[in-house]
Length: 622
Figure 1 (cartoon, one colour):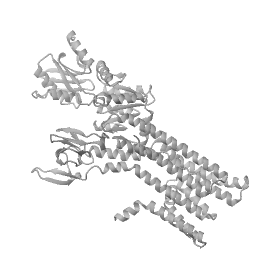
Figure 2 (cartoon, rainbow, N blue to C red; figure 1 turned 180 degrees about the vertical axis):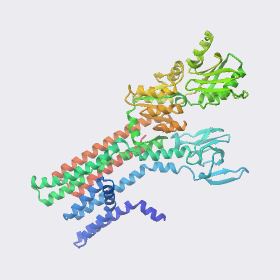
Figure 3 (cartoon, helix red, strand yellow; figure 1 turned 135 degrees about the vertical axis):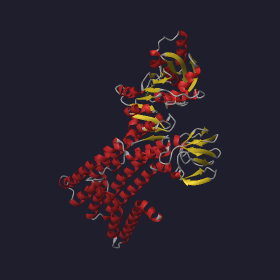
Figure 4 (cartoon, rainbow, N blue to C red; figure 1 turned 120 degrees about the vertical axis):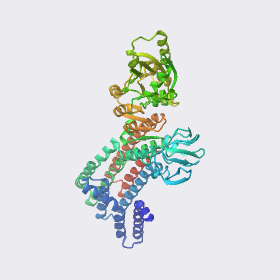
């Protein structure tokens, strides 16, 4: 069974080799003056040209599409009919060789996804309730199961670390060469390698739903997606072939009646024209380069969801950044609090209210008030983008932004309190206000650390001529402080989640192409509105689904994606210009009778191979 499978996988190589062998045997017979050479050349026709003829006729009959395969077969048959069997057989061989090399080259660019798929182990070491270890297929593992991961083993599925600590190689996901240190409670990604001691992890996602599985699926889908350039070229192929099929007979007639060539020479030159005018190199100008770029991006910890997206990145003139979880780590902490009422009661209410929210700031408030006793609220209302209103023991509590809480207070804030607020906002702290019956009772000061690469990211974007913009729901002073820390000059603050998409739309009237980077549920509409959108791999599922590109942790992949896209676009332009130039050069040479059929085929198919290899350079783009 394995032998049959291998033969099928390498059928192109086998038929090409047989075709060459038959041609060499035929040439040998010609040299020795023995008969039978035409039979060997015809056999080479059949064996070497069968696959191309089959594909060409299938497309013609079922899809009503004329392809370059059909042109090559017609040129070879035409050459044979006028007695040039060896030249026709050579044409078939070189075309078959070109197709084989193209297939191998394309397979090379797809190896990235194959390597990804092989990174997750097929089995897992499940820890049973009695402590025994059972080796099971990963498909049999369920959420909540405990797994043992030994030193050097690959984590089978997404999980939470139960053991005190360890270090994991996440380079295959994030592209970051340095191992990541993890402590108990930290998320561990399936497909990463445990480089520390043997650890216990608790599964958080089953096979098929794990982050690694989603990445593989995204890359597979992206490889099937074509850029506008590739789609245009492929759509043009049918028209181009029709034009060639009309021009060749006209050329033969022109060569005979206007140039005075005999019919045999005119027909032979017509077959050369049929060969060299075929758009093989032109058709191969875009797809290999696009596929290579997507594969390279995946290797660098960045999932680009399609060829069109890979091309659009190069157009970016401005990129809008959400703050929390994007420029910042996304794990804010309460660094200070001013109580103006019953501290214990305030903490109880805050704890009860914020446990209903998944926002990072809500998590910070919950952590800070974790030692308070639980209470039951009478009512709770979420005012989107502003805060929450809760009822407890007949009192109305508000928790949220200044505009939501402070603007409705029955008494104005004191000068001392205003000075504290100004000081906190000027140093980048986010303030959460708490009121009881419209009387201010507390101000929580929350701070989120910047990601270490944020400043470097912004500097790189500026060097590339891309305008970075901070878009946040924070107060103006807080937003300005954070922006100044990373080098962003343009800030849009006090923005409600529901208004983010409208802001992106407005920016699109100023900039030709606007990108958006976010990670939360409320970023999804803005991500969808942007020309190119990036989501953090550590963000929510809806953000990852809405975005065009998923970044597996490192923000510096954004400038890399722009450089990769521009390089891809440049290579595609090179390929198109080169392919068209070779076609023109060969046609002129044919008019002056400077080339024969084998040389025309070598020039034509050689240009196709060079175009493919040029596209594959992106697999190693730095």
